Amino acid sequence: FLFFFPELDGIGPVAYDFVIKPWTVVNITKSADGKDRKRKEIVQIYPEPGFHISKYEVTQGEFERIMGFNPSNNLHIGSNYPVENVTWYDAVMYCNKLSEDEGLNTYYDITNIVYNGKSIRSADVTIKGTNGYKLPNYDEWTWASWGGRTTGIDYYIYSGSDNINDVAWYGANSQNKTHLVGEKNINGAGIYDMSGNVWEWCETDLNTGILDIQTVALGGAYNSSEPECDV
Image 1 (tube, one colour):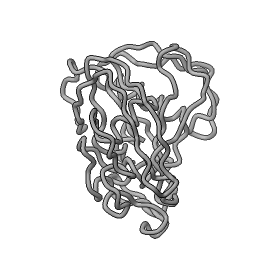
Image 2: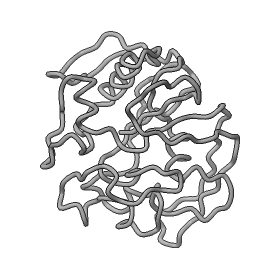
Image 3: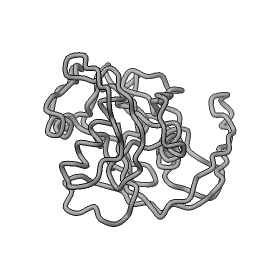
Image 4: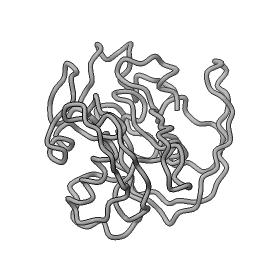
């Protein structure tokens, strides 16, 4: 998964690579590609002063350093491979613990936690809206996956290319296993693996302040079909 930092200022000495994107109100039209896979849609991007988003999917090494365990069970286990087998609750807890590790305020209030081994099976999660790390919501993820573009309608089918092999590890080229983060080409915003490799947890709505766990996984994975990697 990717994580997101909602403010431009005050990050301090982090050990992660971030892409800094301006944040403006814009209607983005996504055009059909003639293959009956891409839908036309209007996405409303809400105004914010700006944000950082992780350049790479969270790696196993990063996750284990913060959370104390590595849930990954794919053929490739290693510090620079993307972490997988992560619940949505694990992802928001990672964001909170990363915030604490760097002296930031936690973004989520997480209570009534139920564990399955070391992973979190369920919990009550609400948004506090501080300066800490968080997951992107659908609109934020979509804008980043399109390369942060705000004009034109000729968007790529996948994140950074119309050729899936340029930008994604998926079912037809991955040998049914994850791959090192950042091996494929970046998209227009300088972000890797937003199509393929592992699914990315997101939030559906940040505006209510309450999460009802209508969460969404986007971008496809190493064992996904081409349409699942469509952004």
